[in-house]
Length: 222
Image (cartoon, rainbow, N blue to C red; front, side, top):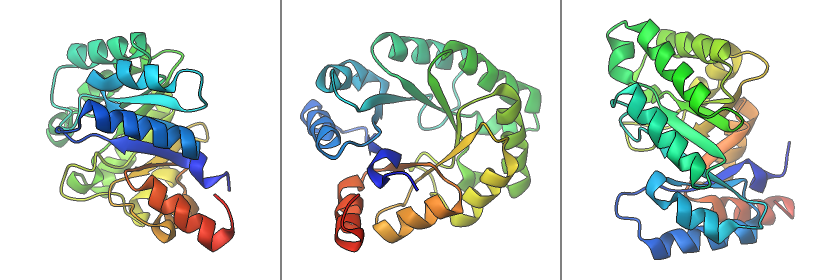
């Protein structure tokens, strides 16, 4: 298993997050050598400036948290975030289109974002609490075809977060080149390790410091 700290996207996506809190997030990420900070796109320039010269990436969410805006709007948000310093993009699918059976539109939405993020890491958020197991498998098949980098369980802003069952299903349903990011409700070391053992290689958490601190106690390092 890779170093736990490098599986973590240190996350602050609350609407009321202040610039000072984002600066603290970035300082923490530098100190603990997390993989990235995950922020709303409006804070990408600040995060990029704070993390310049570090080993921590800037990840921006796009179409967050509902995924219900038009594809062109998502693609533009992604392009601007990349221009301003984001190296990773976490997009939310259009859940309403999926529920309406408009699978081709869902795939096109993801495909356009793949094109807009060429050369960068693209993660696709399913919001697993709102969809069926069959829909999870369908999305995994789409994401494998489109060649995204990660499928991701949740925004953390809906009715539920990551479950071990969903992570395992996603891992089993994607191709070998697509990874799984678990996010939502992961608040302690035990849960983090369980998600990694279920097949995730990245964790979206706001409790990253608590998790790696507990890891240091449990394992003598993170």
